[in-house]
Length: 613
Image (cartoon, rainbow, N blue to C red; front, side, top):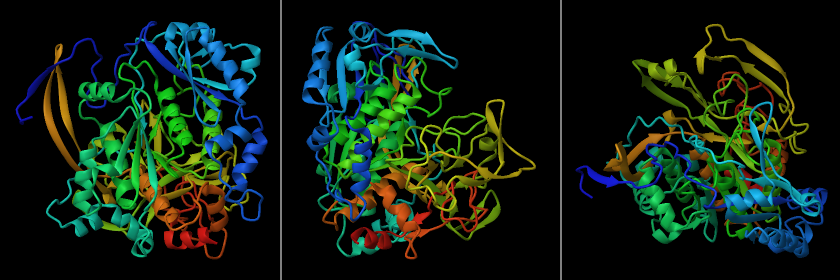
């Protein structure tokens, strides 16, 4: 397509452009899918097994299960699954059983789903909820029904949450050679800063490994990743990338992309693939694309279903996501959903335990807005804060820059909390960037965090105040200290500040609505940005590099790394300075754990040595 504006007519579809949300087009006769999450047959034994896989000296150390092994030991029996299938068939519904026998996908018309589940819309104290009812024999084996809405919604759908910091102000210098470009803008900077380059120099490049990228309501172009990889000197073959469509298939996704146009979700998906593939140049990338063209499936179901697909397939020993479907807070949770916020949390803990039992390491971005996943006067975090995944926070690397005429010197790496580079428009609009961190509202403090100095204690400073729908800078901020309980976030951190950030490349067609038509314009997008969505796929790539030098996968990180952090040969650099802040929580001098940065940053050379022991 040339650079002149072309005209594309859209017929009978909700229009998406520039990251906007589509209007729900589903009706009672449209086919849709929901997930039914089943109870493990031995819940306590399931958890014990997961911990034993990464605990030396136990009966199941490194005895990772296949999905069929999970099914036989902890999933529901084949006869029980057949009972579900038989019941749903009565309502002309089809049932897919994910390997592991812990998750079902039930498909049919919304009208038949409503009948099968006796779904009714009810009001709660904070919003609305779809109640469901199954026969008693099935209900007692069900944890959650995800994605069923008793009544269609005419309001605009929720957008997917993602962790990329949406301020694309700087362009990289494309005249640099590949080595210099990678060191200045690429994951080579991550590898050098955190000593991963010591492993790649010894021939560990992620060979034989596959990295899974979970996306939500976003697609990416394989050619864009190739363009980026060529720029940084990484292997750029198209066969490094395989796409798996977990909801709508390829043709429908193509229609979605055409109507959506170039958008920030596409940029997010692109950078996830680019960063993971550069960090582990010998690995292959599997992209799990969760898109519902006409919103017949909602974000909660799309997101959970993508994880169920990836984990039950068991092809990737490391998964990364920079997306989220919702907030872990009842007031901010999707209205009308068939699952409560607590049920969705429990469902995620089940599928992530399956991942851990199979030796899969899962990494999730903590977010880019500090303790506030969504604007509110209180702390809230995006799904999921599960204790069975590794939540990745953000830091700022040392730098010296002139920002708006002022020389700024940042001598040490600190937690990411940006009030320096923000422009006057950002400050006036109440937009501030910082790594996610704090305390989970839904998950209790896991065993591996208990007793670690700094866990469940905190130091904070009230730099910002939520006022009239935005955050304003406090003239006289107060220091707050105290104790809290819950799963502490994040676990680890890495460079995420756009001031010391990374390059991303994406291309597409920009669309501009004009009546019942849209004007289209091709766009090629090189920018330097930041966000925990950069360092999260880098962590997954680093895991692939380590796995390529091990006889057994690393598996469930958290019990291992919290133990390592308390040893004399800790692989972590603790960021405990009071000046290290995510715009609320700060470092606690002398403590191993700090909510602004978790255990701190990683020396992967040391971490690899400890994983080998």
